[in-house]
Image 1 (tube, helix red, strand yellow):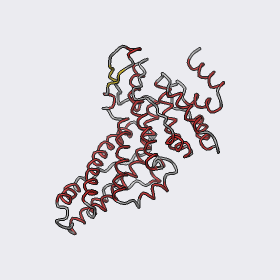
Image 2 (cartoon, rainbow, N blue to C red):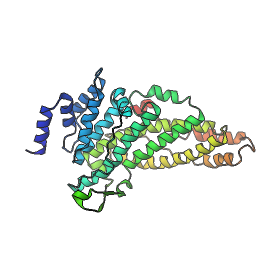
Image 3 (cartoon, rainbow, N blue to C red):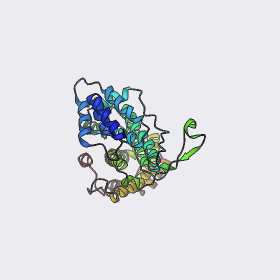
Length: 342
């Protein structure tokens, strides 16, 4: 029997849920079909349905030897975290389940080996999404996160700094999935199967757009990044508005975080341009990224260096106010509604 026939037989003899999971994560080089994804999403909304059954069915597929099957299992996980009922996410944050894919390698074909590097970074990002939910009690990328995001706007300066740490870390891990540097990491293969040697996984950047499965995952990553940036952007603006009234420790933390934010914006610009060229959103517009204003940095550093020695002048305050209007995507703030449309 061919692999596809084996999968068809397994799906026909499995439970309704397991059958849909097998079909959504089959070995074909296409993204999971919408009808199978919608069916699995429905299980997360069924009252009193054991969410552990969904997790176990997907984890079983993530243990497969095929890079295609594993990647599609991760894509389904990602969709459920974004669009499924929150009880699915709540189950995950209370469990000790992990993908254990940091050393995943499928060396059956050159393409499979290349996909392995993407899978490692992608699995780490999804695990970070779960960890972030555990920290915050919600996922900003979830379809129903708007009320939680609105409450964040009332956070104190120390909490704003903590929010920035969380979302900058999330942005870094997300960007690692699509970074040209990510595949350069060597992975130690199992000695029993391959002997004692290290293999360097090569992940050509073109695979982001030429490999259907990776392109599907990249589309989800882009949607997440747009939502993460909305929240990151709003927290940065709130931090800057309060910066020249902060205590020294909060100001020191905020300065370091703003410097990181500037670096994230530079990487995001590269990522967004890749997505435009690769038509990740099927020709839909991806917002232009206006670089975070570095002109604020000298005034922020001076405030910290001279802390307590003098107050901010009216001219400096006006400069900061003008520059705050440029901490935007395309010069215009991207709203939650616009991000949710992506």
